[in-house]
Image 1: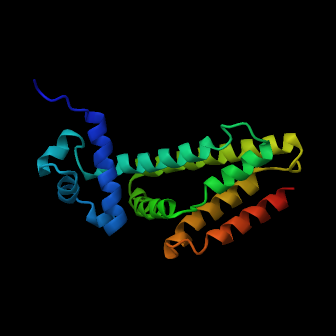
Image 2: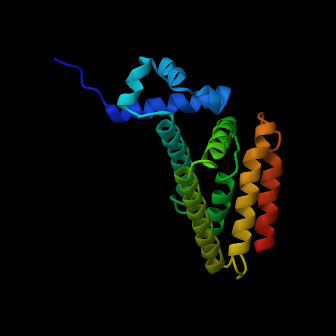
Image 3: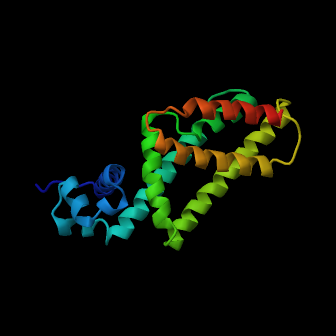
Length: 195
């Protein structure tokens, strides 16, 4: 009886291999040949799952953005005050451990690639817009609860997203997490200004 192959799982495995290669050696290291070798495929076998490197890169970018979104959206799934949900959301967007800092390294390589690829750039812009909307919703809920004052939340949302993206980049220079406490202090100060 022929072995049943889970093609979706194979695609996910290939994306994980691509992420790992980008993390270790940067975007240039993620060639079709290196991905195939690391995944245990013959070089041409990847084409059954992805037509070329660009499609693997797109799938890797989508996967990282999806993982980030799921992590951020999970905050507040359990019953908590709107203020606690806002703080949790802010904390979830700053790299706070080795895995999140490493994911930032992969994301940085993919940002560079997205600059020359409009569909990937649009994907990331959509991610940022969704992230901004979710942040504003949490600020509005905290306002309705009485934990922060009423104000236009667009400007502080933009400020925070810029700080979080900056934290991702800066933490790349401090991979052991030396700057994590600085960003926790920033979150405290950001919430104090909203109050």
